[in-house]
Amino acid sequence: MRNTSFVLALAAVCVALAISGLALETTAQPIALGDTETVMGYVSEYNDGADSFVLATSDHREITIRTDPSTTRVSGPRLSGLMLGDRVTAECRMEDTDYIAITVNIE
Image (cartoon, rainbow, N blue to C red):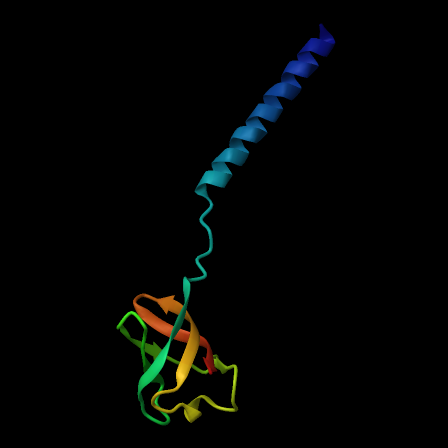
């Protein structure tokens, strides 16, 4: 009888812990790191020293890509070396509807 009470008490504790663990799992929110997208195209607009450029993509979209101090250029020494017509692949993070370049590769 004593062992049965102990086993039942232990089972009750395990069930309570399992339920509280499920409650914690369902209320935890994942940390949003933001969506990323790789964009490829040709530079159709660029002002030397500006913080953005426009890519014309193969599906006929014009996408403005913004840069910030953390943007890195994979090939070449500086982002300011972009020229009209350069073929570019940019990995971007999405902030609302803005494309912010993480890396820019001029091919």
